[in-house]
Amino acid sequence: MEGNRIRELFLSFFEEREHVRVRSSSLIPPPESGLLLTNAGMNQFIPYFLGQSVPPYRRATTAQKVMRTNDIENVGQDARHLTFFEMLGNFSFADYFKVDAIRWAHELMTEGYGIEHDRLWVTVFDVY
Picture 1 (cartoon, rainbow, N blue to C red):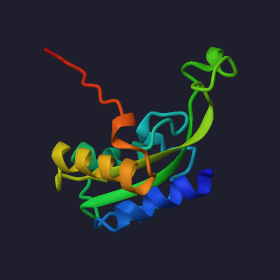
Picture 2: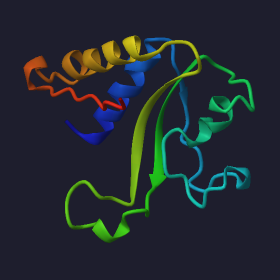
Picture 3: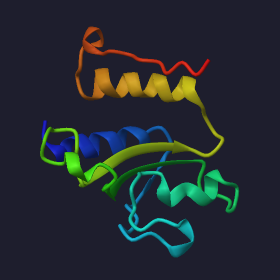
């Protein structure tokens, strides 16, 4: 499956679940962010997560262009370390939580992308 198809399937999947498709923000974030470059898909939503602004929507989905340099010495040594790429994201602003996010992720992987359930591996980060 080509990148354009992966991106469009992701974004339209979440639009069907009442998410607003939000355009990628600039790679150069606003000065108040404290960031030199946009390095994560959620950067443009920081004011909403911190309660500094009221979001204009309850749910959002994006294909955010990002620039990562924190591990630049590893770029080119494997397929995991890149500097410029897009992060696909779905965001809830106090509207839904893990149960829905996990259910939708599974549905997208199995029904949207056609990956068999038995080929998926689930991991949990235990903080206790």
